[in-house]
Length: 333
Image (cartoon, rainbow, N blue to C red; front, side, top):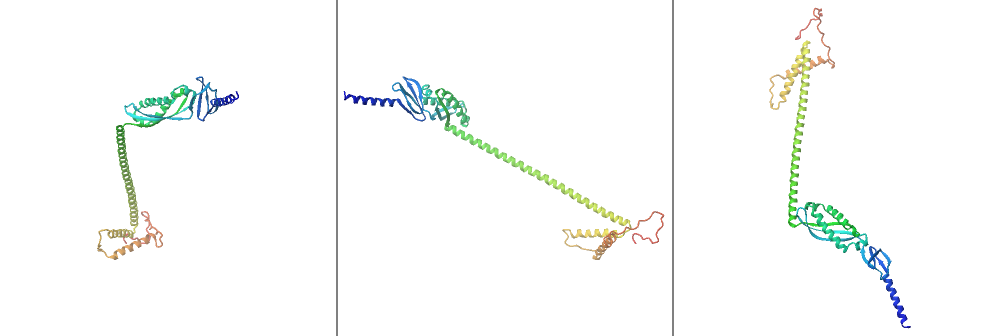
């Protein structure tokens, strides 16, 4: 009896340790465990220390609650315009309800993967190749909406679906490259033609403006030349009228002044002629000097010695009036 007591105590201690080990469960951060009692789901263990009843309760599933990523393998897709392309992608998802993820679907990752691949074929098969290559954001958005709605009963949230690569066949890539080159050459030719057109328009506009400005300049010059001729003619008429009035008043020196002025102007024009190398003067120089002297005398008589205008000669009286005692002189005396 004394030999069996220590053995029984040791067995109790070992049994207690095993019982405690089976009862205590530690759940790490980012994980959740489901608890089953006699095979039926009872509760979910969240991160921390938990106790369960050994031999009655057991851990059913251990689920990762962090966001996870799945690689979608490459697959061939036929577009709406019968082009064959190879497509692959990635799926990001997160478990929100551990019980649903454990008991609503079997092999959760495989189910998500197959669902994503079938929807990729469905969405991309309804698009043309050009639309497929240029609208990846639209494809990602449609896939995300469809797959997230389908996986909602499984207690997960699909956060993102991205198409990684779209690979057309090599012959199709070559055809697209030739098409792009032809399009760029076409745009370059259009730009060159547009540049030449604009250059021609600007050049014609410049010539037009130059002709307009030249015509305006010629018109202004003609107007000013006509104005100058008009003023010269007016001055000539005033001078001629003044000489005529002086002659009518009986002043013989006015004729001498007029003739001498024309004489000097003629000599000036002869001397200024570009083809005149030698000028022969048949007249004596004393005649020219005498004419100049006559001009000075006329100026003195007209303006007076001090520069003031001289008094006008008396006008003849009315017919029948008595004549003065002085002997009248004729205009050529």
